[in-house]
Length: 397
Ligand code: T4K
Image (cartoon, rainbow, N blue to C red; front, side, top):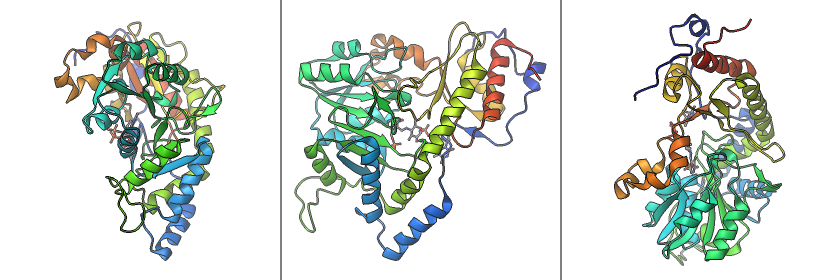
């Protein structure tokens, strides 16, 4: 891609060359892995029982623990977050059109499209990166049956306003909470908003079950439907009462989850420390803005994101390329926006016209590494790289 001319540090400047590359790649989304001895003991129990899947005791225990943490009545553990969205969408009976952000991981829209539902993209608020309620209102048509909102980066979507819109128009409200486990909105844990919320526990999430996810809800009917749909529609041996799929979580995944739950608060502390370090070390770089978290809320701090705007002398893409050359594998999530990905680009090539903030933010954003593989000195080194790329500062010390 074409890039802006540089006036800041360049990959051949002395300041740039003086910053050592990381010896091994520092990925965004490097998994946090709990105590191996704890994991091994769960796996030993699993092998002794010879019970590996199908609503086993580890999955049941895991579900109880997740429901407790999310402050909800029901947790239905599933094989991954996308399967959780598929099932929640069916359990809520969505059809026709569903309003969704384009600025999110592609799974959010795919889950709708796979069921013959048209995802209608609404714009985001450029300050929060979450759905803009006014844009949601403007996207409602007689075919709209629901809103599928995302708590992007683990920052809560405007839950109260979205619920008001849903109530006014008789729409279902579902949350893709893939980023938002262990997060709160106005002091209430994410999990109980809308009719249901869906977590992802993928390896790259701050809390993982290798692959995995959960549908959480206070709604008895949604929970019952989700349980049936997760297991082919079985309501007991030989008794299939509806069309279902297979989205069951395995026992080994639940073992990983139970293990990682033991260290989840330590991981959040590490992420918080890294976030504060990024705040300190990135301060004052013109055109570079760290996305902040409201620290009055519970946060998981799992996504460290910066926006690079026109005041920076180096383009976003050049920064990502230069960081990569130093083994910092930053990501351009969620570029270019789902409306510019297939099949949505072909279905509506002009969707971008109604999504100016999505296009703006998608073109500016960089996700930086954090998690237990990253410490304060690594954060400082990454921030030094960005500073040199943008302003060409000589490094201190
Ligand atoms: N909704 C939202 C808003 C989501 O963000 C996601 C998932 C979903 C729904 C769907 O949930 P799941 O069905 O996945 O449970 C990754 C993840 O695969 C995906 O789970 C996640 N969002 C998305 C944001 O990130 P990619 O295509 O970026 O994956 P990949 O292979 O490029 O890996 C990402 C980074 O993680 C790389 O820097 C490498 C690193 N990595 C990855 C794995 C698997 C590791 O260091 N170790 C690992 O084991 O999608």
